[in-house]
Length: 126
Image 1 (cartoon, one colour):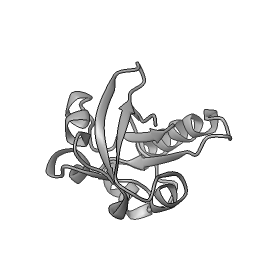
Image 2 (cartoon, rainbow, N blue to C red; image 1 turned 120 degrees about the vertical axis):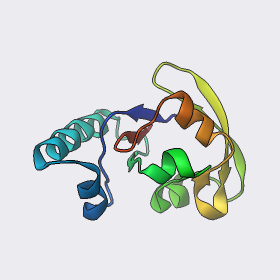
Image 3 (tube, rainbow, N blue to C red; image 1 turned 90 degrees about the vertical axis):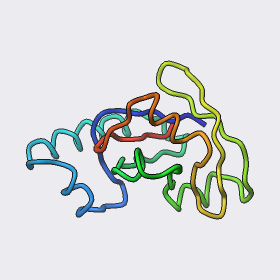
Image 4 (cartoon, rainbow, N blue to C red; image 1 turned 45 degrees about the horizontal axis):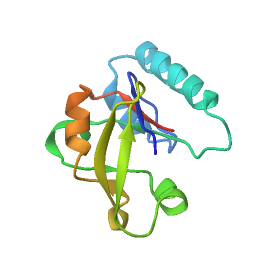
């Protein structure tokens, strides 16, 4: 499993309120969404893909990251497993996938801190 962290934010689930709360103005929001859509379009169709907005609780207050439920149901195992996060330069970080919550636990916070993930960044898969 590969996750990439990129500056910006978009939500394929259409969470307009969330997106609006992350940006100071419409131009900034549009620029970020346009860049994110280009990244998603560049991912080959044979791979499952999603983008996940990083909010404050994903990067500072929490020790886990909830993945989109559709992705969890379709692409992740139904039991807890170890997952390796791989960044855009190939650096790996072990984490735990909690099937019941569709989330990454042990290891996510360290990955986020090491990569200086900020509110408004986008997490992409693959």
